[in-house]
Amino acid sequence: MARVPTVQIKSWFAAACALIAVNAALAVMPGRAWADDYPSRPITIVLGFAPGSMIDFVGRAVANDLSTSLGQPVLIETRQGGGGVMASTYVAKQPADGYTLLMSAVGPAVLRPLMDKTVSFDIDRDYVPIILLGEAPNVLVANPKLGIKSVKDLVAYANAHGGKLSIGHSGPGTLGQLATLLFAAEAGLDVASVSYRGTGPMMIDVLGGAIDAGFPAYNPATKEGMLLAVTSEKRVDFLPDVPTMTESGFDLVGGTWEGIFGPANLPPDIAAKIHNAIEAFLQKPETRKRFSDTGFQAMGGPPFKLREKIMQDRAKWAKIIQDAKIGTDDK
Image (cartoon, rainbow, N blue to C red):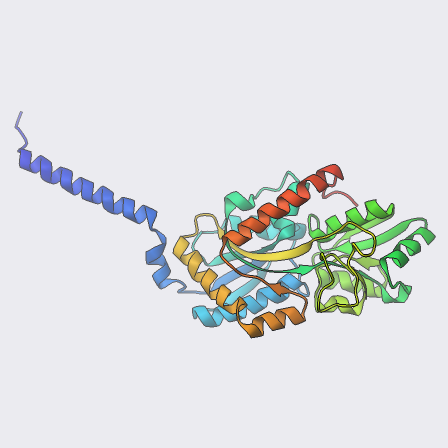
């Protein structure tokens, strides 16, 4: 058998080691080369709720600014269904290249999985948090024609009609549904919890009298109804005359936050590029004022703030949902 020269073996071994080192470097830094050219085509932000909702308003504002700052069209795609679950399930299966993003909220990200164990996506496993956009309180709003001016009046109205009341919300597993069910339990009412695909369709029915009241995340359209209470910890500046649910005698505090996510394994440099562009937009005084005027508190901050918000709300609501035996099939 011919003997392979020692020098040849050493040369082959060195080349192999060099190749392994290059591959290892590429494996741990996949995003840098991609981020240099990102974006090179349009980006899509997927929403799970109908036009007319706060998430739709904020999403379009973010998309418009990103189109300018990133130099590519940023499109909004609405995939309604399941209180945001359809959109979340869809984006989780898309390539992790930064061209399909999810704008989600506390409902599909936290509450729905706690209320429905059949949900197929996992916000921790299937997504990368990019930025916490902000938060709006939910509001209890009634049909103005009913002559109701307070939560106490709403309870009295229901009791005068056999304890029955119909309240709309933006879909199963949303904070609106949870607030409706907790309010019904505390007030001892027989509430029909009516699911919609967004605030717009729900407010049409509230104002038209098809349902008695609604529990949406606040947006300007809700001001057409009779605002009875907000779910914030204290009164909000843009609705100084509207009491909190706590002031109204009900232990119900919470808000609907919204955030941007990418599919799992999104290269860090691409995630950072998107984050930095949105963060700059959120910190502009004109952005914060525009959002504040419509009832939305802009937040921003590093990505871990979004992950932190998810963990805090999961810890807060898990026991409440379990103790109240609440599921998405509750009516």
